[in-house]
Image (tube, rainbow, N blue to C red; front, side, top):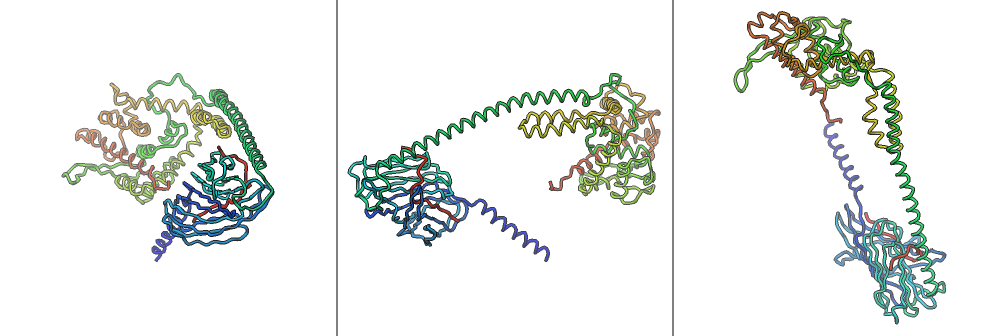
Length: 610
């Protein structure tokens, strides 16, 4: 039941999200609008508007509205709309609902469209929009108003008089709104207005003048031919002034911008140089590493009794450990007598026949629960082995097969990853007690971070950000004592790295080979030690590995088991390291032109759809 409910709610959620996404992407614009205006003798004019919609998403209705009460530039008049109808591309009349209220004529019509182009023919007659003055008549109208909230790519408006004028020069045309527009007199009866790339809320207004007596418009003495031309001249002058002011504003902005860019460019260079000057000054004081002339290239002894995981932290200048520390800590615990390894040669059967292999048992040799010689993170490793991998507790003699550990790391990678992250933090806390890093260098590094990051962001200086990312970490340095020991450990690393190439076996190798193996795991060159291990173990001077069950030098040498033992140790260290590395990095998946004036014409309105 719960599962069914879960599936139901998931499906419902997906449905809601899909509706939301669809609503978010629903949109339209007008690729082309063609408007034909036929002026009648009775002073009305017939509008045939062919409007193309480009729909993105699904639509079922559209709206259209025209203001019927015009109050602009100090005068007011009323309009009326008659004979309204709307047709589709095929000439089929569509269902439409019309209403007039609040001084606005409104229409809503119905259709079906989804991700396609649709063209609608909007037809109506307008009365009250033409004025007749003593010497001229005038149509002053906004085919596209400020309420149009969708862009229009191309507009063409054609106006036809009921009869030709006696002289073409008696006709005047003006356009207002987009400066991309153009008004022209086609002939003594026809005028045309065009514009392209109209933004949303950009009105387009037309004005046409012709001799009086041709049309019975609304009588008025408010204008005549001369006053209209003077008014249009003012509009042009206003447009020029506005364009000039806009140009001056842009030039001023450009000057300010270029000045700011110049200052910013100087700051990029000078600010970065100043930053680097102060950085070098403080780096030499608290960040530059200590240098020791008396440390040889190769160092054969152990620099100190520091545990392998802490050595890795020291070498990484306080950085995070890697899974090498886990493998090295296991072998170090064995070297110190807490663990014993028991290898048994077995015969395994596979698809390709029989083969000899080794099975390794790990045996607990000391009760570690109350052993104060162990550091907390070392005790955590033993707890992982004998409380989690093979739950037997800390009793002496508890044991598990190496395959159990490898299986755990493979099948319970997320569990190990969680444990490993806590274990790494425990090692980090232990290292902080030893104060590998000088406190004053850490304080200076933090101070540089606190200053550099805000300064780079607030002043838009990416160079500071880059310099900070590269150089600020270098302010951190080890204290003098640990810096010296770090160089000794690096000398040992160089020695072990060239160990297999030495012509003569150093005397230290026989007594320290167990230590060499542990730290070679940290350094990443354990295979070079293992390569030389048969030679070392065959020598009487070699330290006896008490952690390897049943080791007998003469018996092992006589039967060839030293080579088998080395192979087993190499296999074990490699498999533990590979499995722990894979588990530690496990991922669960969390991670003529128009003027700009005007605004006195009727019409306007807008369109919508849904």
